[in-house]
Structure formats: C-alpha cells, structure tokens
Length: 356
Image 1 (cartoon, rainbow, N blue to C red):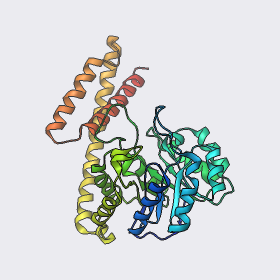
Image 2: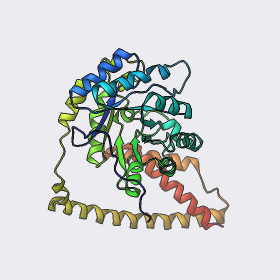
Image 3: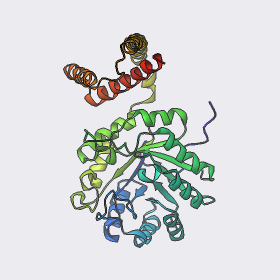
C-alpha cells in the first residue's frame, strides 16, 4: 500500500478542547446574528467558526444565503475575535470573491463533492493559494469519490486538507436525517491514518436531541473532532433550524463528552473481548462460505429446470422473515436489510456465474 499523501491538519490556533471543534450557524443571516454567535462561541473557548454564505439548496425558493454581502462579516470575526473562519464554496467565483475578501479557510459541500467536474474547478481555483480546505463526503456512499476529491485538491498543491463526515442520503426516512454508514469514513481513515476527519453530527442527525449521541459515537471512533451547527435562537434560524444547538447547549455537550485515556485501548479486558470478536468473525466467514456453496447448488438446479435466477416473491419473504427474527433478537432493522440485500446480491451473482 502506497504511503498516504495527507498529514494532520494544521490550524491557525490550538484547540481549547481535546479534539477540534468547528461551530457556528448553518447560515450567516445578518451581520448582528453572525457576530453575536461567534462572540458567544469565542467566550466559551471555540476558535474555529463556520458559517455558510452561499447555500446550495435542494429546491428553489429556500433561503440560498446572503452571498458576497457576508464576506466582510466573516473577516470582522477573524480580525476582532481571533477566530479562524470557514465558509462553503461551490464554484470558482465563490473562491475568488472569498480570497479577495481575505478569507482562506473553506469547505466543499456534499453536493459539490459528488461532482468530479465541480471539484476539479475548485481545485484549479485554489491552486497556488495558501488555504485550508475541508471536504464533506459526497451525498452517495462512495469512498472512492470522497477520496478522489481529496486527492484532486492535494494534486493541485493544497496541503492543509481535512475531511468531514456528514452522513449519506438514502431513499426514505430513517432514524437519522443522513445515514452515518460509519464503515465509509472508517475505510477512508484506514487508507489515510494521518488525515484529519471531523464528524458533522448536525447533518447526520437532523435533530438537535440526537447531536450529543452522534458526537459521542464519532469521537469514540477516534475521529479528530466535530463540526456542529450553532445558533443563538435555533428555532428562528433561516435554514436547518431543527438541527442547530445554542452555544450554551454546545458547551454542555462538550463538557459531557469525557475522553477516555488512551491506555484503556491496551487493557486485558478489551484484548480478551477483541479475541472473542475475532473468533466470531471467523465463524461468520465459514457460515457465509457454506451459504454460498448452497446458493451455487440452487443455481445449478434452476439452470437445469430453466427457472429464473431471481424470484421476487421468495426474496421478499426471505427479507421479511429475517427482519422479523432480527427484531426479536434486538438487532437493527436497517443493518439487517442492508446485510441480507448484499448477501442476496452476491448469491445471485454466484448462481448466474455458475450457470454459464
């Protein structure tokens, strides 16, 4: 495996907490609201401020940000409050206007990361500039697309790069606004251990009451910090009101996020339990191997009898039966649906290959 080109993110100020905390409103609405929020956060020790000026909305008619009008507001916060301020950029013109205003910390949103053309345009606009760039995961759960965006920026000469995990869009409503699918950022971290990865609990949860839970999960998975949406009066926010915290609620969350000592990772109890997990995983692999062998035999019988490989009624009954059993065992329904859908897809491929 090639050495990763990424290194830990170097920011302008040291963090006041054991992990990085970017905080600020979803949108900069007025100069007064933006500055007052930043001032409250700075008083509690937050040094890294976030606020969107340009809002790429899903549907027209929603608040799409104040645009360039808010650039001097953010510069004032940097100069008067001693904070490093980040805003979202989605086009070369955004980059050019922000750089002219004196800003140099940006993030690329999920919708933009989804398009390699858009990322390439931003990489070209940022090339040669002394900037810090944070990259949110794409809307769809594709680690290659996310990694590709990071590598495009690195290839353009951007050295201060980090990733933001904000969850993934899925069809239908689930427990979270955006499914965390933790295996995706974990895989990105495996490929690039030194890369700074922040967790965005606001966009994952979509509800302020879930933000503490998602924050704890992210930090306990050893990610580098949080990007949390905060607003002085969240219920009156012009965008994403349901998921924003007050600065006071953010500080309470931080106070309750106790960080466990690193020495616990080597405790005998954890080592023993990890041994149990390893043994169970080996048993699971053997069971999956046996299941695939049975699928191959089913495929041969279907081929001899000229039956279709996929039988929708059987598949629906299988999924519902497994979900029903899983509920009785207290297992997560979304996880089981994804698991058995993947197993079924692999079985179909095996049966189809076996009949050729």
